[in-house]
Amino acid sequence: MLSLQGDRIYLRAIEPSDLDFLYQLENDTNIWEISGTTAPYAKHILELYLQNAYKDIYEAKQLRLCICDTEDLVIGLVDLFDFDPANKKVGLGIIVSEKKKRNKGIGAEALDLVCAYVFQVLQVHQIYANVLADNDASKHLFKKMGFIAAGVKKDWIFTGSTFKDEILYQKINN
Image (cartoon, rainbow, N blue to C red; front, side, top):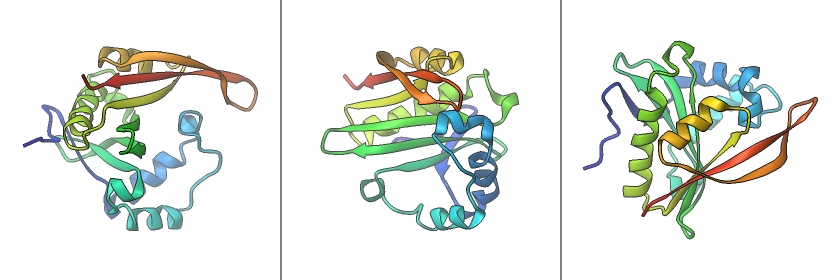
């Protein structure tokens, strides 16, 4: 049986008790550029989201998983989005929000766990991720985890003053 438990972290479904974490993360303007967020989220809207987070990925076409450390502290999120079971693909986003936990292998461990879940349980053929061309840490992580840069989307993201390229990474289950 597949486990979402690693050596230093585990992945779990998002829960109503994660409201404050989600509120802080979604309203962190430092990550709006990578998340596509353009306006703050009200707690009420996030509460409504959490009330519907129980929906099956086949119904909702998305799934959010909390990255938790061994002390049960939520230190990040994994987002599966645009789930397309007919074409056997899913989008993936990841953030380790605890800065002191970054660059310590947490992202790699989370990606390893979620890739195993996606390939074994959801039976997808490929996972893809969109990474800003100037996000060296994310590019390094995805390459390290076996994702291949499949193409560059030129001037894809407008940051308020300039356009940035975005790289499409894919990992195909062979």
